[in-house]
Length: 348
Figure (cartoon, rainbow, N blue to C red):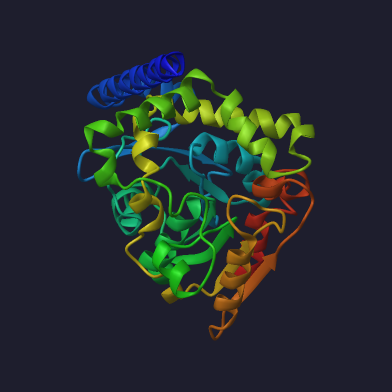
């Protein structure tokens, strides 16, 4: 009995020591903040940046023909990734279709400055609008993948008729709409901590774990989650390399920005209702074997938009074993089979 008590005491002490060490390291990361912005490194990659009204850096990439009269598409990346990933995927598509492309890194990813506690509804005004102004863009189409979807929908909601096409790839919904409509939520909807909680000192461990996940053990650890999402993903070395490279570049200025971006209120409390979006050209592709964002969300969105007068909806829900990344490869990564082409077709 005494020996058992001593063993349990040692285990508890070890666990407490590890917890306190994680908290201390996480607090250090929070105090340090993001690593400095390196404009020369960004320029060497072909990237650009704007400075927002509140002084933040927003990085972006442009691709496709430089024709000022060409249609424009904005391609938004998912959580943990960054704009160069979308540029690499969509550059050959845009070249083939004669479309100007713009990919923007969300706050805290790539070289973009972080913005703890932000609301998705403000992103079109604060981040997208300055990029569109610098690039002399009026009307545009926009696509989103995963966490890029709330921002694509926010752009359609905010800009109204200026948005002539909305493409949603593996979308999810804000927590209030999910509950009102009786739909399953996206991954972590109920479990993620809020920004307010992340500000507490004892949540330092969260930032430490994020650092281990996306810096120390990257890209190996993020790719383990990806491999579990689709039965065939393990066989596509090019896709794994594409995602792994972006996951590492997403933390180019450290993990702190991405950690703040993972807060529940940032991910799931958008500040606007996507049900009021009036865009008439909508493409929704949501793989049937998706595990991160329940496929029923895509089906519900398709029916919701179809119920609006004059809205053209292109919906598909393929099951080819690539889950969350079904439409980032194969025929869907070619000009003729891409979401950008589907949006162009919807423009008439």
